[in-house]
Amino acid sequence: MDIGVVLQCTPPASRVIELARLAETHGFSHAWTFDSHLLWEDPYVIYSQILAVTRKIVVGPMVTNPSTRDWTVIASTFATLNEMFGNRTICGIGRGDSALRAIGLPPATLGRLRESIGVIRELGNGRSARVGDTVVRFPWAGASRLPVWVAAYGPKALDLTGEVADGFILQLADPDITAWTVARVRAAAERAGRDPAAVTICVAAPAYVTDGSKESLAHAREQCRWFGGMVGNHVADIVAKYGGNSEVPAALTDYIAGRTGYDYNQHGRAGNTHAEFVPDAIVDRFCVLGTPEEHVHRLRELEALGVDQFAVYLQHDAKTATLDAYGESVLPHLVRPVTATARAE
Image (cartoon, rainbow, N blue to C red; front, side):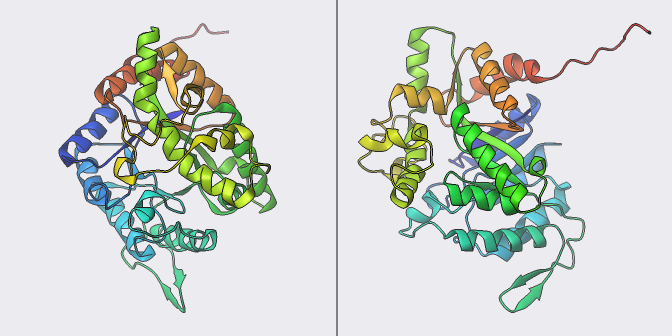
């Protein structure tokens, strides 16, 4: 299983770049960022600097959307970074949340999302794409390679992901919900004539390593409770669309009954005031909290469900400590051992 890290582009940008560099030294495979241009600095400028100070780590948004940037510009940016740094980019995309709602716009439709994926992926991989009535291609990007992963929760979005995406991003780490969403994505891929195993599965959630005490667990919960509020935005949309008695697991939808609103000025921030409705049980299920051994256990559980990458949301007060703990006490236990010598038969 790959381990990635998800960063906010909170000033100073040098701190974001340094965290990504540190993540690579600990063996993290991906450095993702939020893409919400009103709330934080622009990630694409920062990607170039991350790539310049690292050797292998892959960068990309978790997630961008089809509405705040022209699709051809998105593809051109990734293809340019690939030419400069050797195909080390990835495009995570979804309907859009904070980037759109913070400027008074609704999330994109699934139809618009589907169309954007086709244009971004074809252009980002050096191929031709149709934009309106015009067929376009970057004449300089033949060697560019760009996978496109889709973030989704609801049934129709999961079906779209299985039909067209290179990867699926689930932004929570609950094993039961993971099992349901992965099965839905794979079934859609199979119906579309694709190999279900060809869709990469990524689970992303806050991770906080504790010393095993009740006090440290309580602190970790408070640092990560914001995540349940963020997920609740998407869940509220699902409940509004499908109702409370739909095929969507109650484990995903029931907890928002006490939700009263959301302040995007506090989006993705520990200690915010709009996540008080999120109970401890949801924090424990949606996030990965506890000792290093408990992290390894949960990640093994997710891996058994087909998860190829776990991406650590690092929006709390232990950013460097979490990277260090994962590098020293978690990642080594996720690597299958290879012996230097073996007895000949």
